[in-house]
Image (cartoon, rainbow, N blue to C red; front, side):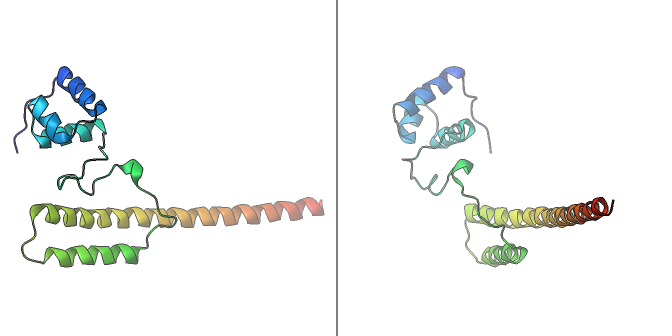
Length: 148
């Protein structure tokens, strides 16, 4: 993959102006003399999400600020089931490169989640133990002050 010509400050300013005017990516690319991929890449780097864009290249993309966190963490069993589904899907012939990359991302994400979840469970156990010790210590202090 070859990198294109670096964006100048003037080009970035022009892009910002075009965004403010509500131009779509195709017209921005034409006006700036850049490819649509270059426009999308720059928009991503600038953290700009165009809500009206629903092209195949952008469909389904969203910023992390739009993600909703679950009330409870998924169990390791649920993560492992996701891993198995991704591994099984990789065995299907005729997958395009984007789908392979997506599935690999899921697999990598599950591996990372498993490691982080294990640390989290260990921390929770330590937290619970400390809370238990604090309660017992409080009861002990209470007993000794009553006797004195």
